[in-house]
Length: 530
Image 1: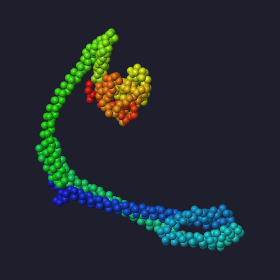
Image 2 (image 1 turned 45 degrees about the vertical axis):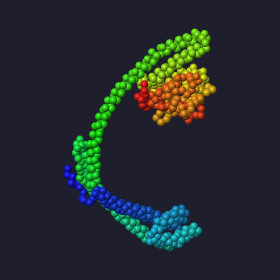
Image 3 (image 1 turned 180 degrees about the vertical axis):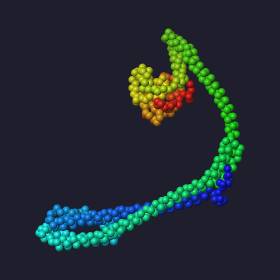
Image 4 (image 1 turned 90 degrees about the vertical axis):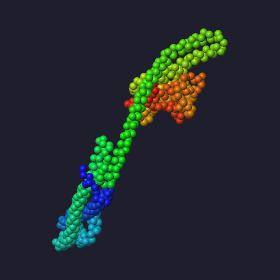
């Protein structure tokens, strides 16, 4: 490609050339637009003069003269017949409508003194006809009959009306001349506007063609050269040096591309080094994943052992301790009875701890797919499981309409059972009141469990979810301290979060948690430890 053709004249940069070309085009366009606007306003004013002034003046003038002709005929007919019905056209000339038309006509001609003078002359002639013949003749016929009107009187009235004809003819001729002159001026201005629009269109097309040619010569050709150089590098010839001629702006762009090529060469070496490091890290991660799978298998084996092998000797210890308690209670001293009771209680607590720990470890380990679950059904199962302590405590449990969510039904039943059981266990002096709430929070369902029990100090808001953490002595409230930790793990398995609402009420405790609605993908058990 011949890049010499893209070099502009010395001393004229691309920015300067474009500035001059755009400024000149803008000035020409602005002048043409201003001329067009001026002519449009002029044509509009002239059109208003022709249509609204002279056309309406001609129409009203002809209508008034026609009414005068009808009035003159009506007066002559009345003079011959004496019939009042023939005076209807004459009466209309004295109506308010005729007076309004006369006023409108004078307003239309207020800017033309000559036409206004002609109209006034015709008006004076009409007034003389009214005063000297029409009105006296009507009065004479009404008073003495038609016999009193002679031919000479009729001729005199005709002479007076001929004066109206003459004055109106002059006025009408002058009005027609004004209208024709205004119409001719309108045609000339319209033609001039059309010529201006055509010239503006041709000028704009010419400016566009010239600007397009200039842009092609000043920008497109140098950029094509740069594109060829860049493509050479992009196709793999990273050692090819980018060189381009043209305006200073294009040369600077070429220099930037060359700098980018140099950086790419440098970064490519760094990437290759990083790739080797990533590969080494990937091998290490693969090894760690294998180790993690082995650890998970060991954990599952431990869970199996804990659920079978450890439970059996513990059951024997608990069973024999209970047999000792039943058989020898009261036969030994008081301290021996106390020791046996401690042993029985410790064995039972150990069994509960192992069972709860196994339940905690099983959350999410089965890997069952999440499915639509009706929380109302889960609540019914949880209440059925808690029926004994619910009836014994007199607990009153209410709930909002509960939605369908995406989850594991057994785990959600256990979640509700743990929360409701805690609310009943940590009650105050009277029967506990517990309420399950549900509301939509954006794309999630936010549920809550509020009670009126002894409550939880806000400073322990996070500690209550830690496994084996207890806020009360063991002899005050039974339990292993795993319930709320189990709730946290279940909620997180479902892709939600659970927290203690410290601002919900002055007494009692309120726990809130979120779950995904049906049809919403949930990010769950991949991040939950088995």
